[in-house]
Length: 135
Image (cartoon, rainbow, N blue to C red):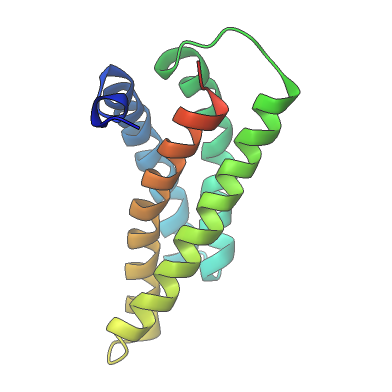
């Protein structure tokens, strides 16, 4: 995989979609966690359930300009989201708990939610770009 295959116009569009999703999703996630007192996993899962649907359509039509539909596309999209989510938030929660062990649970989980978003974005881009919406 060449460096230019990853850093192009599609990445810029993916970032625009990601910013939109991040604003919507992080609002949902942090409000559920901090105001509604949902737990870590429920708050982050609600975020990704709602924004993944938005992301599918925005990335399909805007970012990657894909017109066709297939069962593989839908299944691979779902797999990419679930895989990216579980890996990103699992790793994030584990390492943040180690790195910030002296801080409160609330602080650690907010930090893990934030770092999980960052890891998720990278994994999700690679999966959508090279598997789901591969040209």
